[in-house]
Amino acid sequence: MSTSKVATMHDAIAEVVRDGDTVAIEGFTHLISFAAGHEIIRQRKRDLTLARLTPDLIYDQMIAAGVARKLIFSWLGNPGVGGLGAIRRRIEPATSGGAGQPSRLEIEEYSHFGMVGRYTAGAANLPFYPIRSYFETDMPAANPLIREIESPYGDGKVYAVPPLKPDVTIVHAQRADASGNTQIWGLLGCQKEAAFAAERVIVVVEELVDEAVIRADPNRTILPGLIVDAVVVEPFGAHPSYVQGAYDRDNRFYMDWDAITKDEDTLQAWLGEWVYGLADRAAYAEKLGAERIERLRPGPAPSGSVDYGSYR
Amino acid sequence: MSGGAFSQSEMMIVAAARELAGQRVCFVGVGLPNIAVNLAQRTVAPEIELVYESGVFGARPARLPLSIGDPTIVSGATAVTSMYELFSFYLQGGLIDVGFLGAAQIDRFGNLNSTVIGDYDAPATRLPGSGGACEIAINARQVFVIMRQSKRSFVEKIDFRTSPGNLGGAEQSERIRREQGWLGRGPSLVVTDLGVWHFGEDGEMQVDSLHPGVTLDQLRDTVGWEPKVAPSLATTPAATAEELRLIREELDPGGAYTR
Image (cartoon, rainbow over the protein chains, first blue to last red):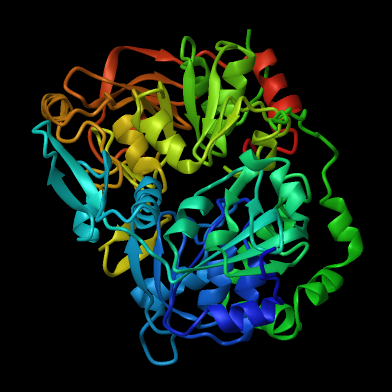
């Protein structure tokens, strides 16, 4: 019987995330832990390096709140809607670095495959990951950590990206047991690579289940409890992103964000009302309202089950 | 038979969909490419497989996906993969026949910029960046570009090369692609709100047809260089009633991308 790692969001963030850390909240459109991001804002963590393929609204919010000094990414936008105003304002010189303006945000930029390769190298303890991207582009000039190398077998050039080993990776999942064995279905993104690459891992779940539930379907496990430091049970913690089978993306929120993020004062007021002004995710869900949440529930589409067999 | 009045976006979608005839595996982007590929699946390419960079092969979306990672592309798909598998085995492994790209800027050889307007370190406008675009441009067997044309987007010189096209011309592009072992042959098509372009033997884009109602002068006014025009310049066949019905009733009933 292993020890329970179940913690409140407050305690998990307080104990696991430290000022100056490199933090990756991963999840490609699916399973983005907004709840953890908001708690990081509430605890006023500082000088973080935030890593994520698609910064999405959560990093726009965290960067607007001043938790980060640097961003590592591959695609910067509000998916399917528009831009991320807080981040853009901190990159473009016309709106940052001057008197009365937010300070400039340092950036380190790759492509999607480059970021996935970085986590993969980090997880596998490799010195770099080779990919056939970046040829004849301006990306290696923009980021000197992207380097051309010769194949040691004499068959041409590839590009190397360095390992990315976050101090903390945070993933949201459908379910885990108390020791952190974690199962996901739907889009898998690169949560597995990002978690194995990290020094410390927080898993946030819709549902805490018995170990027997995990063991009945081991093919669905993406993280073993071995690498997990804290399990936070936070239903609806991925809103406005989604959880396959549990709730849909709240597209209205993504559309509304377009107007909020365009104006710094409006964004700061939003943070006051929806993050600093609320104690936790339960308060957030209550403020959002049961009716809005109910509208995001999908109809059923269960998988057929498989028979693993009993071998005694 | 023409299907009556249609928007420029609808004509772009229809023109792109028709070009997918005979294609088997297509890497889909959200927005116009997504509707174009879904239209092709219902018309000229019933066997086409939809691949999404978020990690889905063989998607059968039941509604228009709101983003590249919408849950509707998962339910009913052939396979869900990690992004590592998708980019390594499907894309870099050479299984993608056509990749769709858009961009803020394109040059005459189909090189694309989706990173910055202005200087990289002090940009006038910060754009989204590569995402998967740079690897799609290199590894997809061919690339279809879909974007609106204007003097700001069709430029003599792009500010940043995010995704390589035909580089400085066909000769250089073919040599580098061969020497470096790229699987992609580069861009083969550009569909815009005004017409359809293909690439000539020199690797430069050439307008082959103008959409109904568009004049050559109008097209020239939106290109930052003297564009090459096919000797047999045609008019793009107008969107048919059935193509418009599929777009309006099945693919984008809310008109999110087509009005």
